[in-house]
Image (tube, rainbow, N blue to C red; front, side, top):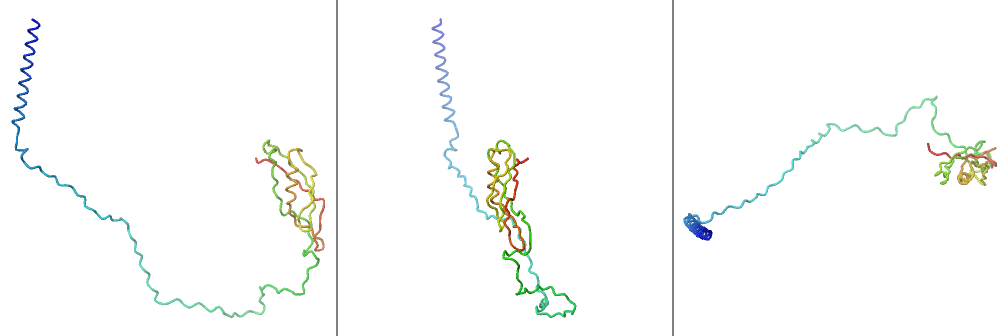
Length: 202
């Protein structure tokens, strides 16, 4: 019985398939053939027309000023003479007297004592700076007749061994003074002390 059922099912399947193929062929053959025989419609191409770009810039026109009707008056002549009253005080610089002589051979006009005019900043010792050490050094110098210094000597250093004295000696050689003047002559001054203080920035 099973074999008969399989044979019948196979025969029915073949018939249905064959019927469907014939139906599809008829549908295709019965289509509208006029569409295939007409000429194809050509779609026109779109062409972009070139356009001139215009800038939206507002131009401001400045009107030329009108010429003045009358020219400006001429400036007065520089050579104008004024009447000077008899009791007027003259503000002109006084004429130098050729016979005036300065006293002394040093060229100084008056006596004065030595005054520091330039004190260099000593270089902070690197080791003391990294350890946060502060201190001072006292240096003795000789002030020359021109205001310079020579022969610096270390008198006192605190604390010792941190390089404050060496840095102060180097700075002391660059000290500048107004020299001491006596009777118009520059004097050399020995034994001048100067204290250099080393402090960290707070």
